[in-house]
Amino acid sequence: MDLLTKEFAGAPLERPLRHQISVIGAAICMMFSPGCGGSPASSPGTEDQNPTSAADSSIHQPLADSAVTAATRGDSSAATAEHGRSELWVDDKGQKWFGDVPMDVFFAEPYAIVSDVTPIKVNAAASGSGEIKNDVAADVSNNADAQSATRESSWSDLISASELDDEVKTIRNFLNENLQSVSNYNSSMLMIPPKAATLGALAGVAMELPDSVSWKDDAKYIRDIAKKMNSDTLRSGPKDQKRLFGLYETLSDILNRSRPADLEEPPASDGFSEVSEMRLLMRRMEEAEKRLKTEAGIESAFASRGDLVNHEATLMATLAKIVTLPGYGYEDDPKFKNYAGDVLQAALAVKLAATDHNFADYELALTKISTTCSSCHSDYKNN
Image (tube, rainbow, N blue to C red):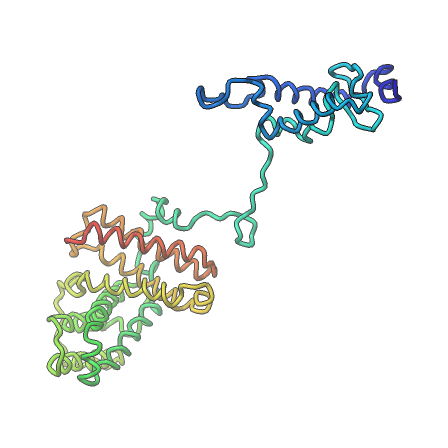
């Protein structure tokens, strides 16, 4: 009897070693005993009912190979010696055994292996923070409280006076450039109606916005000029070019704080829907979405064009609120208002992503805008 065998035969095992042997014994029991270990029950007819077929599995194969080889080879006198089933011993080649089973077949974590709960390392999202962030698009679509709050937002929650004024200046410059000649007018004719409708809508917002723009006192006149620009279907040629250019000159005077004295008073009953047709406002929203995709669709462009992203998202959010107002026919349509509310909130998420320089969140919010608009157009295409 070698030294290790004598040690275990002559003295009680130390507690840590007794614990290890107990764990190993339990693992062996679980591996060789059917129905032991809490594994899910096999489906009848789909798994071999012969218990010995378990030796074909990846867990049992090393044990079967090692035990059979050691027992049948006959090249170790220690392997043929009789030992107790729970006896830990070493043969003359230094191989450790537990009963008649070689120790090297046991896994370091038998409970985890047998129970199939070995921990698997999962890489954190590649955001640099080591944290998996909530999906902004999911927040946009699932947070009902936020949607309700957004739909009830005041104008100042959606657009500032400076942001509104920037868009009015852009429209003014566009009209100045494209109404100076018949050829310029003809080439840009189809782009004018959405610009005029947006101008009229923003003038209406300026009338209600707490923050003031320099032309706020004359906002109703600007709105009326925008309405007159779209009073009839535009046709190519000098007639409509001349008519629109005259309206533009009056608009320019008002914005320069030189309102003509003989300017007629606009109808007091005019609201957003009387001035700006919904389909034209939606064309401006479509333009905003297209610019966000084409001019800030990659991360480098997104990083360098934050002002553009913020501006187009602001316009989209503001117009999404306008089309739900009374007069357009959908103020009592919860489905339409839900679509508009989703677009509005997704546009605000675009603005937040621009502020945080978070391109991943930007893409998610932009996708939400696209899918919502597609669904809305599909549902209301005949309206």
